[in-house]
Image 1 (cartoon, rainbow, N blue to C red):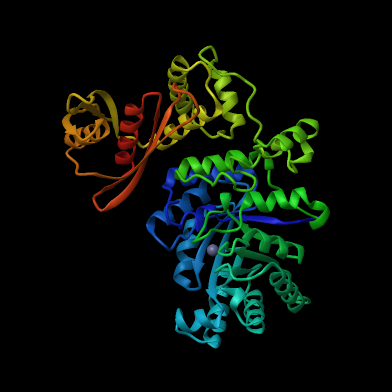
Image 2: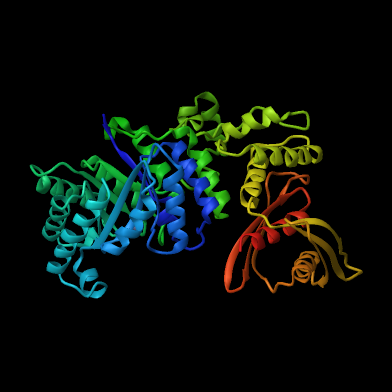
Length: 499
Ligand SMILES: [Zn+2]
């Protein structure tokens, strides 16, 4: 059995796609999850892209150990310098240097020539290798590049000090049979030279990212770029859960394995959904809501006789098994802590657990049974709240169809200062948000509001996600409570706290 290394780009390719941006605390929290999943490489960001990205790469490199931490760099020395500064503290740093190799990109985007690209690769990869013990070279748009030229570029990168050679199907163009041939061609061309690892980076524009990734693995690729839930530019990247579970479920076919702890796949998927507020489609392979749901009579009948009739993956193997433990108002702090560990929340501080336990007791008072989903919703609210400067103290909302909607509110700042606000509105939420703006003297505008019930039942917690614009910035917020007005207020304050 051959090992396939997992290079996770959730925090880089995934995070740079619309709607998936995360702040430092969120990225750090996701990086811890990836570390627990036991991926081989975490690409933490694109350090030279912005100060925010730099800070995230640095923090992850400094804090997350026992795993390679990578930063993307354009093929220029200054990008390598910035990325190297961010990565210095990492136990195993990796500079991922990329340049386009297709004629289309070289002429239209880089306004350069093949000869120039070769010279640049030799110069910058050597420079990167003089800084960092491990350098990966990525050929952007490799799958639409002239094969002989691509091979020449990879040879140049290799002789300049790159240890990992990555070919990117940047626009999701290639077909599985073609990538198999390409990998075979490149491996033949590179044989006899210095040692290297070959890796692939596939996009999903034609829905083939995972298929192409697996085809490359079959042809001998050593490493694959993936993201949790397949997020990434445009239609996304190859999904971690699909790639890992295909290799595992069909090891007879691939003869390969990964080191991923598959029991944390569902917790990782849920965590990303929590942090970004973007759900996965119900029919998504492995982690979709329906991936293990059976309704038709024939299927249910078969499943009852033998699970294997309609399921090829044991749900427990991906961490899907629903808790049989009933959590309620008699469950103590210890029971909550154990449940948090099972759900993959292992890095909460004592203070965070204390606060969670207080909130847990309130939910348990209001509901008889507290489900895993309730706990996850509370954790999400807690994780997003720890920079909180403003907190809700008290409010009164009047609403009905025979009176106007009004809200009186008192917000407290972390230093103890109180702010009172009053406003009317088209509805109770509008009144509440206007009252917050009145109290804090802001002109924040609500761009997007989404409410969902965490579990079924009329006593369910309401989870509210908002996007607001303030000072030319768009920030998101999240709030959860058994009272939907309070959840709505918490989400708005959370967004203001995140600005
Ligand atoms: Zn990409």
